Image (tube, rainbow, N blue to C red):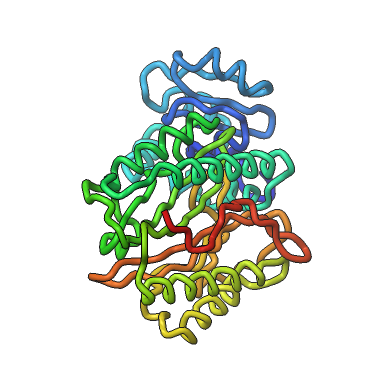
Length: 342
C-alpha cells in the first residue's frame, strides 16, 4: 500500500472484493487491508462463507450496520484510502463523522490489476463464451414467426443457466424490426414476423466471469437493403477483429472501424464505441472508443461490436469477445456470423 500513499485501504466494490478475496456474498461487505492484516467486514450471515471462500482473511462481524467495527480497526492509522466511485456521498459523510482516519479517495486501483487476465480467468471467460455459443445454436432452432421478443429473451436466460452459467451477465437484449433501432432496447411483446431482423445481445457468468456476444439474424426472406446493411456491419466488425493485437491504441482501432462504416455510408448511424473490456463486469477497462488513450496489451479481453441504428427502420449489431495477443487475437465467441435465415 505504500505505492498508494495510504496506510489502510477500504474496498467496497463487489467485483473488486471478489477479485481480491474470493468472497462472493453480501453486497454490503467491505474489505479492509492494513499493513499487517486483511479483514472482511460483513454481517453474521456470511461468517461461514467468508471462512470457506477467503482463507487468509479475517471475518469481522458488523452487528449494528454502522461504522463501529471499521472505526476500531482503523483507530491507530492516520489515513484510509477508499474507492470513491463505489461509495455514496451519504456513506462518505458518515465515515467522516465515525472515523478518526483521514479519508483519501482512490479510483481504479484494483481495476488496474484486473485489466490483464491470468490463465484461470481466461479459462472461465472461454467457458462462458462456449456456453453462449451453445445457447445461440439452440435458439436458432427455436425462433419462429409469432414468438415475442420477451419469450426469446426468457428462453435465453433459461438456457444460459441450463448450460452451466450462474446467471445472465445482464438483461438479454432481444429486439426485432424497428425496435432494433434502440441499441439497448428492452424485449417486449412485439411478435416476430417474416422478413424481420432480430438482434440478440446476451452473455452469462461462469465462475464469476462473463463473455458478451451479439448476433443479428433474419427471419424468412429479407430485403436487399437489409442484406447490404448487414454485410456492411459485418465487414466493419471483421476489420476490427483483424486489427486487434498488443500495441494498438484503442482510439485507432475505433477509428478504423468507424472509417470503414463511413466508407460504406453508414457512420452516422453508429452511435456507440467499438467495444469494451469484459471480465468480472460486462463493461470494464479498456474502452475501445474514440476518446480512449489506452493501448491493448496481451491478456486483455475486449469486445468488438459495431452497429447501426436507424429510427423507423431498425438496427444491426454484431459482437464478439476476443483475447488480445502479441500477434493478433483469439476470438472466443464463434457462432456463425453469416446472415442466418430462420
